[in-house]
Image (cartoon, rainbow, N blue to C red; front, side, top):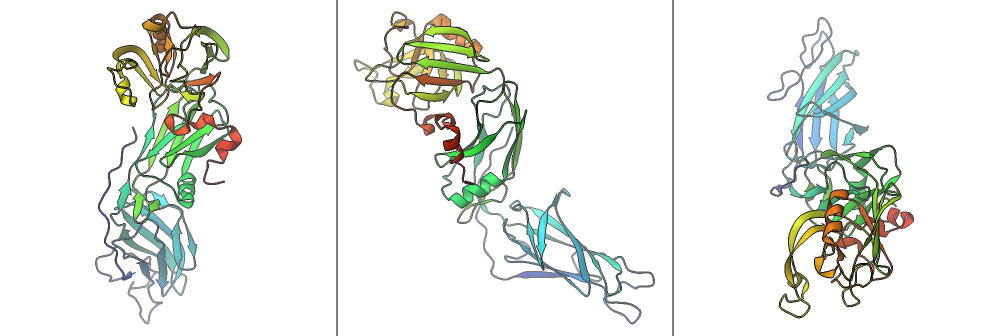
Length: 399
C-alpha cells in the first residue's frame, strides 16, 4: 500500500555557496583518477599534465541542497566528458547540462544523500574519474494519499489522489500532473482533472473497460507546492477493474435498472427523496459498502426527536455522496417503492433486493440519476463523471 507522508521541520536557509575541489590528495571526499602510464597522479608535475579536479557547488550549500536546486559543475585542469548523479541506492537521475549548470529532470528527494560521478580527461586526453557527494535539506512537506488503491473496482472509479492542503496555483498543479503518469491496459484515452483544490483524478474518456488495469506512477518527491512547502515521497501502485456494472436510477419513475456489460439484469422498484429532501441528479459512484450502520438525521441538521427525524440501524448500505445519500434496505417504505418518493434523499430498496445489490455491486460502480432533482456537485463524492469529456479535460492544469 502507498504510505502516507508526515511533515518534517523547516530547513534553515544558508546564504553562502559551498564548493568542493576533488582530486588527488583531497581530504574527506571520494575521488579517483585513471592516470596515464607513467603518471604519478599528482596535481601537476614536469612528467605529465595536471590532474583534473572537480568543483561542485549548490546555491544553499552541499549539505542543504533544496529539491529544485541546480548544481554547478566544473572540471579544473581538464575537460568534463559526462556526469552521473545517483541516489544512495545507486539509482541514476537524468538531467541536462547547460554550460556548467546541471539541472535534474525531476526534483531531488528531501533529506537524502546523492553521489556525483564525473568522467573527465586531462590535457593529453588521459581519462579521470572524479566523485563528490551532496545532501538535500530537510524541508516542510504536505501529505498526499492515493485513495481506492485496490483490485476489482467498479468501472466508474477514477485514479484518485487527495492532498491534505489546498493546491490552488495553476503552475504548481501543472507540475504535479507532469510528474504523474497512468498506464492502462488495454490502452484507454484519459485525462487528469482537479475536483476542488485538494483532489486530483484521472479518468478515461468513458467508463473503464471491464477487466482493465492501471499502473500509477507519482514522482512527487521534492515538488514545490507552496512557499517552503514540498511533497516528500514518490508512490507507485496498480489497480484493476471488474465487471462493467452501471446502475440507472430514475427519480421520476421510481425504478432503478441494474446493468452488466450493457445488459439489464434487474429493474428494481425504489423510493427516492421527497420534494422537501430530493435525491440529487447526476452520475455518482459507489464509494463505500456497509453491512449495516446507524443513520441519524441530526448529522445533517434534523433532530432525531423531531417529526421528520430518525436514528435507526439500517442494513445493506452503499454510499454515493459524502453528504449522506445511500442506497439501502428500507422495509418501512416497501409500499412506496416503485411509485412514490418518500425518503430523505436516499434510494430505498426492499431488504431482499438491497441484500442482492450488496452481493452484486463493486466499490466504484457508477450510479446514474435522472428524472429531476438538484444537481450533484463534484466535491460531494466521486464527481469526475459530472463533466462531459471536453469539460473534464479543461479541469487539467496542463490545458
